[in-house]
Length: 124
Image 1 (spheres, rainbow, N blue to C red):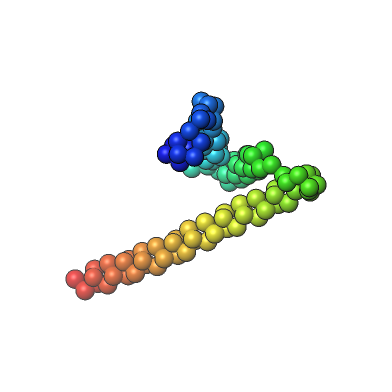
Image 2 (tube, helix red, strand yellow):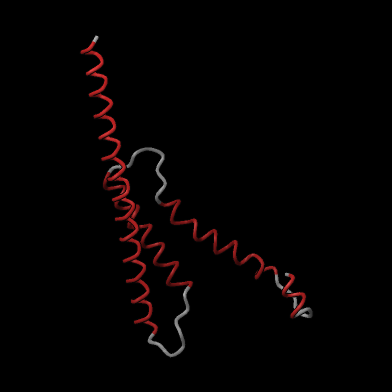
């Protein structure tokens, strides 16, 4: 606002321009609602919801990004779609690997605790 008042004081902003970021933010929250579960999902439900989440993210990105003027629009959208897919898969694999490592660490701690409890009970 301050920069606008200094450099272009004669221009005004419309309400639609003001609300634009909030509308885009609302659309960006949509994929997270798709994967929300009240209780533990089955594997089929999990896979289907994540496929729907990926499709939603792909549609949002493809509709929001405008291809440059001198490029083939179909090729541009295919490349962007492939990049979004690759990033999605990398993020999911990274999250799975992190949870897997946490579960291994937790299992080791539980085994250690269990062996300590057994040793203490044998001493008494």
